[in-house]
Amino acid sequence: MSDFKDSEFDVAFCIGTIFYLDNAGMAKALSEFLRVTKPKGIVLVSFQKNKGMITRAFTFAANAVPIWLYLPIIGLLSFFIMPFSKLLLGRRVSRAYIRNDVLLSLKGLHYGQPFNIKEKFRIKTAETEYSSEKTTATYKIKVPPDKNLDSIKF
Image (cartoon, rainbow, N blue to C red; front, side):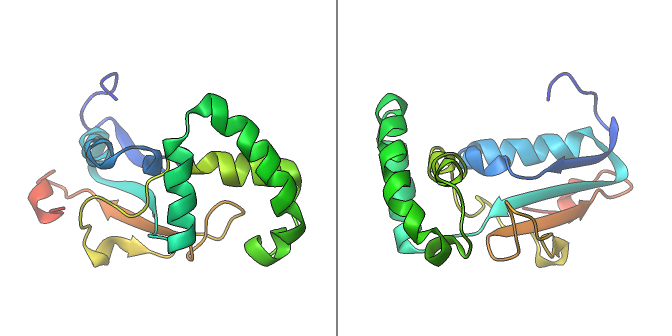
């Protein structure tokens, strides 16, 4: 974000990507969004909500295995998971969807948020194929007119 000047944008948004950064990266990214957003501007950001034990175990395994080995493993796993897609995902999906959008997306994924954002900034997450109120927590942060970020306090 170093290519952008302070207070350059009216709106900054990050939907579907910040949770691939580690905790320090997430905090730095949010600080940068606030820096490049104009006073009275809006920062919109979504984080993955914490997940259950099975999902966390799959994510741990995905991150522990080198990518060159993980790709053939998920190709095979997707074949076995596909018949259970309706039960697991709530709808029937293709093998490619399971491989690429579910299993591959676990690689590098981090759940939760590394800092506390005040509840007053929390808004309902839009329902889409890739995010929903069940899976993500979205925040709409209005940048103070004086750019005094102490009032936001993370």
